[in-house]
Image 1 (cartoon, rainbow, N blue to C red):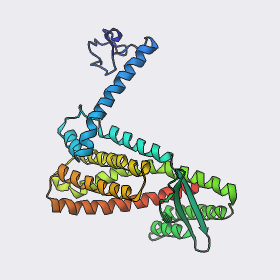
Image 2: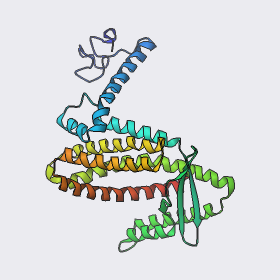
Image 3: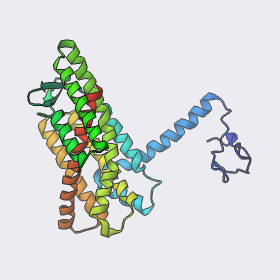
Length: 312
């Protein structure tokens, strides 16, 4: 910020303010009554400063798994981008690239079998490839019956009403889908893909605290604070999103396989470096963490599919 924009006293509380921030209320010592281009210049300066931190973070972030987490824990934070900033940047880049992919859900409605099977196919770039052979056995009275059974426990409860409501909505949705044809079905497919893709970033962000909780349970003897596990979660998820850009941009079976192996190796090496346990113990906990988180992710994706189905 330019020196001529500073004031001797804080504009908010009038306390003496010799520096860039007020020592009494914390407000920035900046008079915004200035030419437009002066304000824009300051904003660009701050943006490039943030970009420089991001640039210094790239090499250790990619090549030294767990290094940024250890630096953050040690208090050496000003040189590198914050874990949250890295996560937001990488996840934004991934989902932005994903938004250019043409996703066409092929819905097969089978009322007799009481199931809605969903298959997502990607195309639009000349590299049409199946994303999954059936993302979810999905949702109808069979699912609702399970919800009701779990909610019922030993007698009538609020869960019963919730299960019945879900069952009615799903049955009505399935019946409506069975009557869709031609352009109306294509329009629903587009809405469903948009709803599902919009839900996935929120889902993964919501699972981050649970991932950190799994780490705290697995490494409880290390006496780490929860925020340290959350920092690790931000870093490994940021790396995952960044590396997953490769299959989106390049495509190919070998690229996808290499990406999966790179992510698994990164997480394993990062766990060993951050939590400082032997390789056998680290590998065992890595396996437990992977299985538990895969179960959480599967349940979350099933919920995202159901929400997309009901709201599209």
